[in-house]
Image (tube, rainbow, N blue to C red; front, side, top):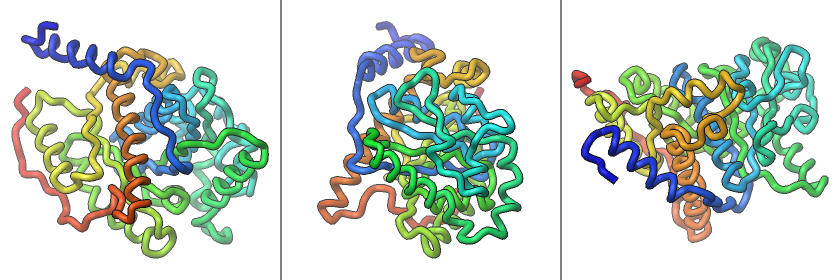
Amino acid sequence: MDDSTPLAAQLAADARRRIDLSGRRFPRPEATRILTIANQKGGVGKTTTTVNLAAALSQAGLNVLVIDNDPQGNASTALGIDHRAGTPSVYEVLVEDEELAAVVQQTPQLPRLWCAPATIDLSGAEIELVSLVARENRLRNAIDAYLEHRAHQGLDRLDYIFIDCPPSLGLLTVNAFVAAREVLIPIQCEYYALEGLSQLLKNVQLIKNHLNPALHVSTILLTMYDSRTNLAQQVAAEVREHFPEQTLRTTVPRSVRISEAPSYAQTVMTYDPGSTGALSYLAAARELADRGVLAAASSRDGVEPQGAQPENAPLQPSTTTEDN
């Protein structure tokens, strides 16, 4: 295929990726992987990454649960899940000790994908959790009980649990960090997205030291990447230099299709599966699945798994001028 122009080159790359990924089934992890998708900066693609990675993995034959831990409920919207006021939700699980099994709903378009929705009630949970016993462990206890429930019911084991967090570092996010084993950080390829990264890593380290020794940053995904600008290329280079093991090779470009999909209560994986954005998330999901298998094998062999958090100086890219 002719790739003498940028558009033709993108079409050729999409065609190759489509052939490579079409009908591919991803490897199952040895045990349920629980990942928190977090970044205290808003607008970097946390929810978009959560729902599209979950959808891509479920399309590839894996069982996935999304826990919408953000009061905005955007993940629930994108998955076509009812989350009107009064719907049993994560709020009842965290504050009223409801079982997670009672709130989980199956997504309408993907039979291997489930979602625990968030309603507007969750906006008050930050205050209500303060006075509760073991307030940091409530989501972890609920997830552990749900996994046991599925085993006792003879249901298929969940392969992945994704926890979508609000853009803050309050008790909702702390609950997500305590419940997870891994942290996935989406980073927008712009300067501001890097400013809070060091503080986020410090908070992850605090949780690791005091509440969840198993927690580590396993994955970093570069989102809203525009290869035409020097700034995006520089931010990507900075992140890869500081976090070579954690950063996925796949980047997610800016895409109108990705932005349009939630308005149809869909992920881009079902809204336009042949688009560049959908193929990028599918490639990222395959990379995530493959890395999990390799990390498990390394752990068995006594090698430190990928994703062990390095101690690096804060990221501070130098100023550059965009060339678009």
